[in-house]
Length: 251
Image (cartoon, rainbow, N blue to C red; front, side, top):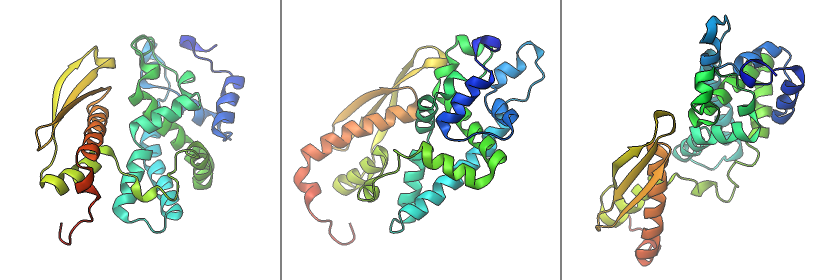
């Protein structure tokens, strides 16, 4: 076991590389991608952290996912491709990927960050995943990055028949309300509770017909998406006939 209770030997890194279907030529890049700033700074350790790789990985990920979406869905328009990409590279999506491949067990954290639950914090996991992808890009180039992303996202690309329907809940709710009432939804933060590293946000959305819904989430964005989903379910039940009618030209 390495410092702070995290395995750092060759066998452990081999298991991670096997999980992501990429083996590094320069293992030091992988080690840097796994080094959080709290670990590098604690105790005066002279180590490079993963923040620069995160910066690079963010851009590389967006390019790779954009290229894949452009190729997979030749009939989808730019706006919808943008929404699809936003979902795929969002913090929740990347955090889920980090958990799926076991990346969270290999991140090197300082004791304070570890004690505050950093190892399962979505923002930290998302940043580490971006750093890992940045390291893969530097180590193997675009081809290696594309192949790794194709593997990691293999079960996440929308099915061809569903691609045109992929929209986030907030966008869909706004479109439905604009169609029904010519108004936009109004979101309000009801409260936020819990410690800084594990806050829970409660958000309410009010609709033009007076209905309101409340949901919670680990971030404002996640709570808003959840409550928008609740409101969409209500609209589709309450205004089924209106929404089923074809839109008139100019609507």
